Image 1: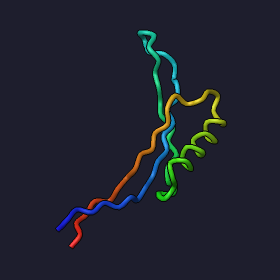
Image 2 (image 1 turned 45 degrees about the vertical axis):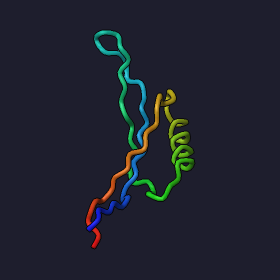
Image 3 (image 1 turned 90 degrees about the horizontal axis):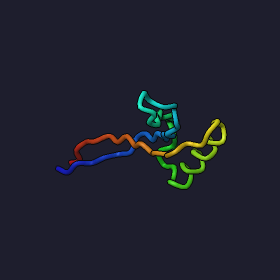
Length: 75
């Protein structure tokens, strides 16, 4: 038997500045957009991220794609 993984969910995460900590170091938080089409390409996800960025006061410092896979065995 071999392992099989199937992409079932994609989340786009935008990292944004969130003030300073007690030592004056920059803090960050993540804003997540879930339930995106698992078949979306990297270019499409970047476009979506840029559109969401346009709704924010300040542009995100980073964008991440989180993928969730179902792991199982194939016969």
